[in-house]
Amino acid sequence: MNNNEPENLTQKEAATAYARAWNRLDCTDFLKLLAEDAHYSSQMVLNELKNKQEISEYLTGKMETIKGYGDYVKAELAVVQSPLSEQIGVYMTRGVIEGFKAEEAVVLFEISEDKITRVNMCMPGLFGGRLTGEVPE
Image (cartoon, rainbow, N blue to C red; front, side):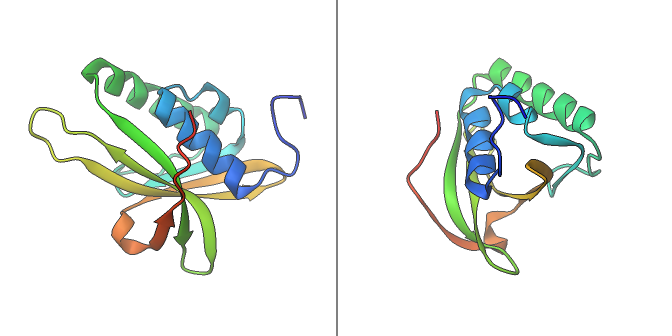
């Protein structure tokens, strides 16, 4: 593993990297943490993305679109009650664009062998939790 990738990747490190990517609208560092066969599911995306390349293309394109709109995005670390346990995740909000309602999401991660193997974006109403006040920049 190189110096840019943590050994023994934790939920908090994965969440921090994802939040930082969205707060900067630059996913370069986050993508380095993905396993080649990582999956990305979202209740806002019809089909599950099934590898690092698909996730990279989706996130890069989405962030470029948001930059083009000059939209507001905030990603904050949160303690989330997932179905089996409490874990660190990301609570995201995206601002209003020409009358469209702000979007909200909770993002959770699965990790194996120091790589993110799964990213799950869900509606926040499905999970209890609390914001930590940490907004990685």
